[in-house]
Amino acid sequence: METTGRKELRPSGCPAPLQFDLLEGHAIVAAGWVVWMRVAVFIKREAARITASAGVESTDAYVGYESGGYSNSVALTGVGTFWSNQSALVIGRAGSFNRMSITGAARMWSGSSVLGETAAATGNVVTVGGASSLWHNTGDLVVGNAGAGNQLTVGGGGTVTAGQRVLVGLNAASPDNRIELVGGYLSAPELQINTGTVVMTDGELQVNRLTNPGAAGGATFLWSGGTIRPKRDDLDISAPLTLTNAAGATFSTLDTGWDPRTIRVTGVIGETGGSQGFSKTGAGTLILEAHNTFSGTAVIRAGTLLVNGSLASNSTVTVHSAAIVGGTGDVGRLQLSAGIYSPGNSSGTQTVAALYFTNGAFRCDLAGDGRDLVKVTDEVRLSAAGSKTELDLDVNNFTGYTTHEAFTIVNNLSDQPAYEMGHYWRQGVALFDGASFMAQDGGNSAWLQFKIDYDGGTGNDITLTVVPEPAAMALLLLALGGVAVSRRRRQHVRPRHRF
Ligand SMILES: [Ca+2]
Ligand SMILES: [Ca+2]
Image 1 (cartoon, rainbow, N blue to C red):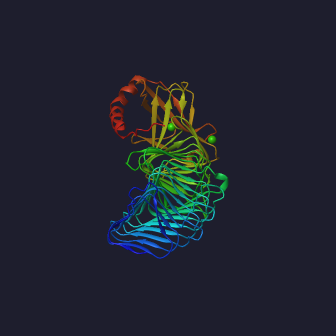
Image 2 (cartoon, protein in one colour; image 1 turned 30 degrees about the vertical axis):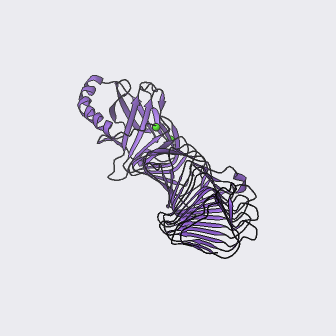
Image 3 (cartoon, rainbow, N blue to C red; image 1 turned 30 degrees about the horizontal axis):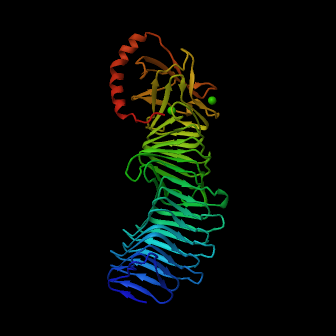
């Protein structure tokens, strides 16, 4: 059957949908507008093509309805081409190896969609690619309901959206279903991987939940490139993520409206094929709560990283100028050439394998009776030649000290000698061993004098001691001018996040 030009099939006065059964032959809809109004489209065998400047409207649609309905092909292509389907679109109800492609800025709208509805429906494939090509579902999009080996590929600037969930492998009997995100956008409130695989090599995944409720089914998210960002609001990731590239994968904590958000990851971030990592961009906070196993580098370019679970001891975190790193969980090698490191979520304790500063700041929160403390198991390097690492004390109604008694801010658990660690700077002044300096308590405006030692504790721990004398007033008056200027400057540069 060939359909060209403008044709309308209106079953007037007919309450039941008219079935447009394509049993054989081709439906070629070209150069015009064909309205299949209130029509159920049943493409049972052979191929249908919808080409440039043509449109289809339908109530529900099946491509490959019967088990004999295999190897059908629906191609939507070209600007102005569209298919608007009110309720369910099924690619492979009982049929296998059916295909739908949406390319060249063509558009498909559907209420909900399923690839591989029954167990008999395998190997059905939908491809969406090319700038402005769109497949939008107002409800769920299911890749593999009971069928196996079905696949959605999104690439080259195409967009696939669901108003509710994108589901991969809806039940445990539907293995090997797959989404490949090789470019473009996949956007939904939730991406749920029950069984099967999501492979992300480029493009953007925009979701608020990335879940894996059928964890026993072996769901996999393989991530070598592209950006995961919150769709709107925050993003919770409970599915495990497997990194497959040293630096290609990016978390952005800016949502699709460019507002800073929180991404909370409770799934384990692992790796395959060697030592892999990721980067984080944008204002907002990435919180890692699992015991992660990747061994490569996490590059924190902007915003905040809190490690409250753990990172592998042989992994690396590098901190760039607009970034802050902290948390209460174990970190491997922590390397700052800029930015801020502050243990804890406010004041708190964190263990790192190795702490390397070349510039940047160590911000030590002294709040109430709480103090920041970092424990280092392997090595501490506070500065490299020509660099200045700032010791930034953030003092707020501090009561956690006894006058003249040292408290530890860096507990060096290694046998590294103190002289190898180097020293901090504070407002342009080198803080050598035994140096004293003034800091104002931001909570009560009181001035405190601190002494710093690098050979405290077991001989290689960094300690502070509150020493109110001698001649506190004289020192205070001397300090007031310069420090007051510094305070004003610091208020401008201090990040809003306090942790
Ligand atoms: Ca802190
Ligand atoms: Ca020690």
